[in-house]
Structure formats: C-alpha cells, structure tokens
Length: 541
Image 1 (cartoon, one colour):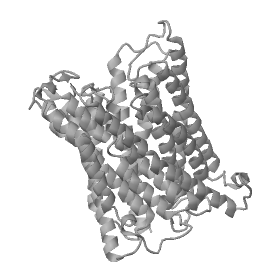
Image 2 (cartoon, rainbow, N blue to C red; image 1 turned 90 degrees about the vertical axis):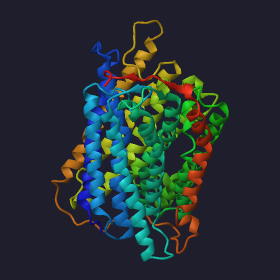
Image 3 (cartoon, rainbow, N blue to C red; image 1 turned 135 degrees about the vertical axis):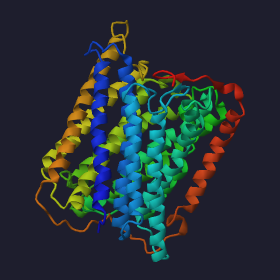
C-alpha cells in the first residue's frame, strides 16, 4: 500500500515539469548554433541557457526522480508508512527554494558558469547557495531511506531486505557520498570568493574535488533505471528475475567502483600526476563488471518471461516477448543505447585514447546517449508503471506510449551519433557558435543540423510523455491490483550479511575514495602557487 501518494507525485511532477523546460532550452541551444540560424550575436544568452539546462538535468531532475521513486519503494517494498514524512516535505521544499535561488541569477546573466562551475570563473553567490540547498534537500532523503530501512530491520530481524529497498538505499548512500566532493568545492573554494571573503581560488583543487562528484553522479542517475530493470520489468512482462543475489552484487559493486574514478575527466589537467590518472582509468574500467552482470541477469530474466509465454528455440523465444508492453519496449531500447554509450565510454576512460576526443562533441554525445537515452527512457517506463497506482486512474492510449518511446529512441540516436562523428573531426564542445564558412567546417555543419533534427524529435517525444501523464489524471477511476515488485526464480529465505546490508560496501567505497583522492587533494592543498585570481562572470560583486 502507498500511504503518501501526494508526496511522491509532487516529486515526480516537479521533476517532469523542469525536464520539459530544460529540454526546450537544449533544443534552442542546438538550433541557434547550427547553420540553420544566423545567430543572436549575444553568446551570453547561449551560456545562460547551457547553465540552466545542465543544472536542471544534472542536479534537480534526476534527484527528484530518485527521491520520488525512493519514497514509493520504501512504502511499497517495506509495507510500512514512510517514517519522517514531514522531513520529506521539508527536503522537497528545500529543493524548490534552492532551484529558484539558482535559476534566477542564471537568467539574469550573473552565473553563466555551466553546471560544472569551471573555476576560476565565479558567478553570483546565490547560484551556488541554491545548488547547496538542492544537495542538502536530497541529503534529507538519503537519511530517511537509511532510517526507514533501519526501522524495518528492527521489526524483521534476520529477514531478507527486499531487493528494491536494498538497491534504493544503495543509490541513496552513493549519492550522499558522491555529493560530498561538489559540496566541499562549493563551501570551501567557490563560495568564499563569491561572497568576497577570499581573493584567490585554487582552481586545480576545485576541479579535483568536483571530479569526486562528476562521474559518480552518473551512477546515481542510473540507479532508478537499474532498479526498474531488476524489480519492475520482469514482473511487468510476466516473468521472473533470474537471480536475486546477482542483482544485489551488482548494486553493491556500483557503490565500490562508481566513486574512485572521477580523475579520468582530468587527463588533460597538469595538476594531477600521471600515476593517479592511470589508477582512475583502471577503476573506471571496473565499472563494466556490475554493468555486464546486469545485462546478463536481465537478458536471462527476459528469456524466462518469453519461455513462460511459449517461446522456443535458441533465439525463437525473442518473438514470444510481449513487445506491446511499454516496459519490454523501453528495456530493449534502453539496452541498445546503453550498449552504444558504453562503447563510447571505453574511449573516454582510456588514458591513451581520451586525448583524441577530449573536450570535443564526442563527450557531449556520450553522456547524452547514456543519461538522456538509456537512463531517461527508463524514467519514462517507471512513471508509466507507477502512475495508475499513484492516481487510481487508468493509463490511456498505449499506442501513444509506444510512439513516445520510439520517438525518444530515434531522436536520441539522431541527436548523439552526429555528435560522436563531429567529435572525431575535432569539433570542440561548449562553443556558443561556429564559423561554418571556414574551410573544413562543412562536415561539422551537416552533423550539427542532424543533431538539431534529433533534438526536435526529443521535444515532441517529451510533449507526448507529459500528455500521457496529464491525461491520466482525468481518466476513468480504476482499482489497480496491489503494487508488487519482481519475484526471483529462487526467492531468498535468508541471505549472508554482506548481501542483506550495505556496511561492507560502504566501508570499501569510502576507503577506495580516500585512497584514490587523498594524496592529490592534500598535495593541491599544500601547493599555494596553485591559487589564482577569480574571473567574475556578470561583473564583480
């Protein structure tokens, strides 16, 4: 039973409303810097838009989805009302206040620093304070997930923790620790300068601290999608989860390997030694382990569903899958994009190969294909699965749902593949405009136009998604069956302590983070010549 539907819907609707605005900004950015437009002659407008788009899509949108889904999981999986409901609302309102505090100075042109901050550029202090409030609001959710699991375990000593809650709390703890890097950068590096308490900033230290957050945040974005892979899709398509234990191992390994890898974003930065760059490159490759475990487990679970439906033969069972089911379709499309995006990521994490695509449009294509493609399409899928249970109304027009998912997939491919190609040609990212009349720029211009078309398809798909959810609220009332998560082929009766709690994995996560970041951070703190004057954006305060 879901006890706090208003709380959960509030998180989802705010997330999807902001998502709708952000995707319009993204398409506008692509259009005005493409050969299709004569340019606005004001590059600052472009960077305002990029900052707002990145801040919403990087911090606010996925955080709200994770929080709303997390509260749903807590009540549905544990079978108990949410402990700390008032605190949950407080965290929600904190995110609203933080979002407004951040977006207003961005819209005024006082904070065109992009969501990665880029010190020594310094913007208006309210932008950074707003981001801090968003993070603190999300930490309320992190604490509540741990508290609710603790309360349940006290009432059920020795019982296996439901897989959905195990994964949910793993994602919450990952975010809690991941966000520490950006929080340290904001509180001790950027805000003192933005508030006028310091006149210099250690740009190298700031970038290392942000790298603590920069890549691990991707796995926080990914957690709701992976929870849907394991705990929603097998049930929705009429099958069973192949292995509960393998699922738990995958989520535990994400905790361990997702954190100590961020310096692979700093391969071109001279402040960090080559040795630590190599170490981070190796650990980045290790993230493939839980990903491959997931691919194997979910493919096996899908095959179980197909064979239960009468599928036969080595590959003939694929035809027996319920392709008309939105969960099956979303899973298949997500896996295709995850495959392409992961293949591109192998180039990014290679200490040798990264130099060929560093800071080019290849990087833009990669993370949009992973986040905007493989992850966000599963956000759509879980919303479609949860909405009737949250509203008590039927989900209308599955044909429209299919169109929306296919359009998102095709649009993301048309958007990101040309970006990868343009990156191989050397086209830099984060440029407000390009001179397409220059020799050699024709191929890049064609790629940008194709990406603009892909972006327009994504805007239409997003509009269809919001239409489906809005229409649901006025649909006929239904009494849906009680919500259930996927059941494993072999339901666990008891579990080893390492797979029924997160203490071991949290210890490994913290230890590896300190090992891989401790020396570079201390070294940069002890390097006073690394401090440089700030470059104020929008005028010195």
